[in-house]
Length: 246
Image (cartoon, rainbow, N blue to C red):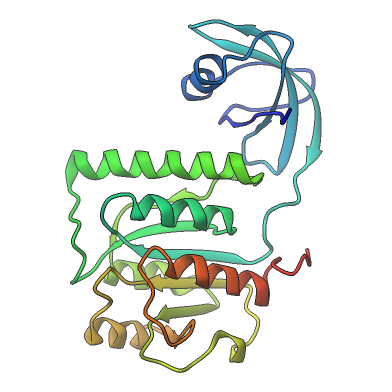
């Protein structure tokens, strides 16, 4: 039986007793219905996996004792910041989930001219919390050492400034013939993905003025939730750990 893997923000060290936070405790106690004596794998983003034994499991709290720790080597050496224009329904959830599985470092939800989703106030806060929980679940499932951050929703203008620190900045669209294979190996990448209707010509021009290079993943038009999956896969294969090189 596979040992459940759980993220917790708590400080973890061998020999310590830890009470899990409410979200983790609910998943372990109510969803998985685990009992004292059973084993968990915990991680908190410090680069290690911690094997823990449940010492208490009730409806109110779950406590564990940390038995051992080992280094987690599943983080990519390539830093990738994804600027993903917000999409409708579960498309954004899919993009976030798969991006986490493919090693993204940070995800920045964006609004653009053709973006059909507008978030403000409490609705934005609620969606950000939901997207972060999607990222947590994806990191637990795929064995990552850390959970990528979901940044606050940004305009394209703010995104251009935010992404300026990356060595390579790419705006993806099918109206260019520039393939990723002709680009030099970077240490960090910023990917800009447009909405269902695509980025406007003016937005693409603005991205290029801020140092973004146009790049194509082939001649076909991809959905907004498919584009980051294809782009991240290629980036990891070319410059990250997609070929098993750590």
